[in-house]
Length: 142
Picture 1 (tube, helix red, strand yellow):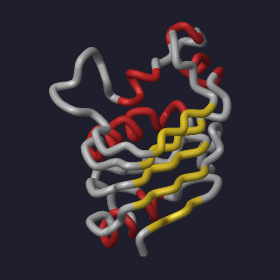
Picture 2 (cartoon, rainbow, N blue to C red; picture 1 turned 90 degrees about the vertical axis):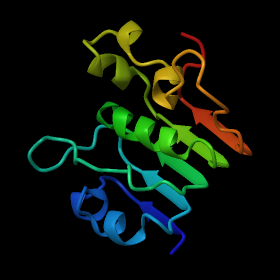
Picture 3 (cartoon, helix red, strand yellow; picture 1 turned 60 degrees about the vertical axis):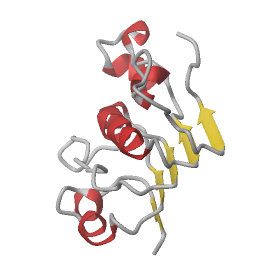
Picture 4 (cartoon, rainbow, N blue to C red; picture 1 turned 60 degrees about the horizontal axis):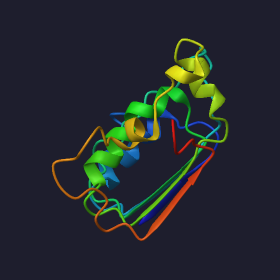
């Protein structure tokens, strides 16, 4: 399979550090589309721990509804795929959740640069192969 769609919550058994897709598909997967609820929690009230670091050959990444707890996971995936990523679609659904997650202060929430992993000037081309960029419900200027 070259594409994987997930809905609602991401089970650890699928994308966890020992998940099925992580172990068996990460080297061949070129497209990853995630659709989650920004407030999705597991049965214990915690976000599922997922690991996107093995996915280093993605050409397309789409994530609709990431929660604030997945920002580091998303940033790591973007950094490890930045040189060959051709399509990037991010829909944060409710940006105010990010302000609430960071000391309840929306001004303290991460910037788009923080999420994309661009802090100042990157050491080389960043998203040099990008063809499609879609950013929804995210402040461009902070």
